[in-house]
Amino acid sequence: MLKPVHFFLLGALSAGMGLTASAQAPSPAPEPDSLGVASEPDSLRLIKGFGLASITEPDGKTHRVYVPAGMLGFVGMLPFYRREEEIRAFGQPWSISVDKVQTMRLRGVHYEHMVVKGKRKHLLAARVANGPVELFNYTEVTNVLPGGLVGAAVAGAVLAGTGGAGIAERRWYVRRGTELVQVQRTGFIEQMSAYFQDDPATVTALIQQQVHYPDMLAIVQAYNQHKLGAPGAAR
Image (tube, rainbow, N blue to C red; front, top):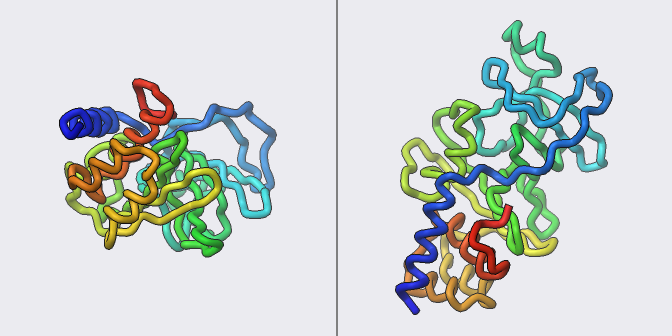
C-alpha cells in the first residue's frame, strides 16, 4: 500500500509543476464599466507589469482595472490603475482595501477573499486546484515575479516546496462545499488526516509523513483524482 501511495503523490506533484492556477471560461466583452475601462475577455497582455483584472465587490458590483500581474496573492491594499494611459504615464497607482474585493480574475487566475468562520482574513488568495476540494494559496515573496511566470511559480517551486528562495510567508486554505478551512502548520498531520479521512490513501501518506505542509498542492490533487477517478487533476 505504501509504495503505490508514495508514487501516486509524487506523480501528482510532478503534474502540478506545470499546473496554472485554476481558470474560468472567458466571458464576452461587456460595455465599459463604472470606471470607464473598456472591458474585454481575460487577456494575457501586460502593460509595464500590470494586467487587466475583473474585480467583484462583496455587494456584487464589478469593475475592470489594471493590477500587478506578478503577485501570488494580495494582502492589505490592492494597487491598481484605472486606464492604460495612467500606467503608461507611470504615476503613483491608486489603491483599494482587499476587504472591498470579494473575487478577482486576472490573466485566467481566480483570486478570492479568504473568509474563515465568518471572519475576513484581509487577503486575496489564488485558487490553485479545483474539484471536490478546492485549494487556495497566498504566498508572499520578497521579489515580485514577472507576470508571465505567475502560473508556473504558483504551481511549481513556490507551492510544491521544491524551491522557496525569497518566500516570506505561505498560507493554504481548503474548501469542500461552502466551508473554507485554513491549513495549520502546527498539528498539520492531525488536521489534514481528519479532513481527508474519507480517503485512506491520502491519510496513509500523511501519517507516514510522505507529504508535508509545502506539499498541499500534491495532496489535494491526489485526493481529487481519487474521488473523481480521473487520470489528471481537476480543473
